[in-house]
Image (cartoon, rainbow, N blue to C red; front, top):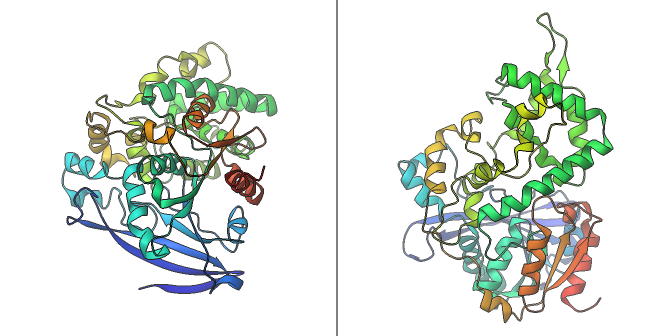
Length: 433
């Protein structure tokens, strides 16, 4: 059943679709996808081309917009937009600590989760496209991981695409997870240095918090174990346009005086729990490294292993040597499945995924080299989440792909730059620039 309703300037329609869990077995188990159709109120009855938005992640449902903010306002000038909750996210069939035990034990759960990568998401799109467009191709906007999905789309089903726009999401076509993280840690270090240059008072604040955590390892109000490594992972904020400022404001109210001496404030604990918990997006932690799996090599907790090659991120050593504490960035580690109550029941499942050796390729270099779909990609200079060199190498491998390389925005440029970013990229797909 579809239900339509209104917000300021837009008409929204809830849509539900049944798709195979395994597209290789279309008569097998079905799961549900949810998507929200958005159209400008004045164009609700018009015959418009479709644009499907693929959210970043993995593991996040589509944005819940009110009205026409950010890039959506530009898209609604000419498109009917589909905000897809990718499988396992949002209002689609969920995959989390509560539902995964229905699959059986850790091995069965891991087998189930192998169907939650970019290839399955793209086949979902192709399964629902005919019902919405009557078979006509549509335009895809892929943000971050959504861009990874878009490159898979170009590799496997380009006939479904009228055009493709990618923002901060050009993946390496062949890099193992180790290479991805080996390139990432130096970028993260640069972002931390830039943060401390902007807010030098945070050097001492971060060191004080780290020292406290090494001595106490408190359990936060919601049950999260705040280790020093978990605190360092707040550096994920530094990849966003406002992230450095958000981190600064967080650090400035960390401690309060108590009868037993300085302690972490309740306000700090509550905010940190919200930033670190994966309760709302557990798939991010479970399949994050699996999105790089393309051959018989296991990912094997790549970010954790590669971190050992960069001893400057060792908090205890940093404090001993009186150096600024380095935060870390977008990476998943085995200890997260101990510290986060939303992930603890899934530790063995995560281990199963980390040890898998049967990943299938996600990208087709030959098909990309012969691409005929108009494609444009925003590449953010020194993007903390996606390596610029990897992205540009891929851009050169996709026939006809046009890039806009900019240092005006961070990884969330499609949100921060909104209509201007999308307008620029759509123009590039039409040879208007």
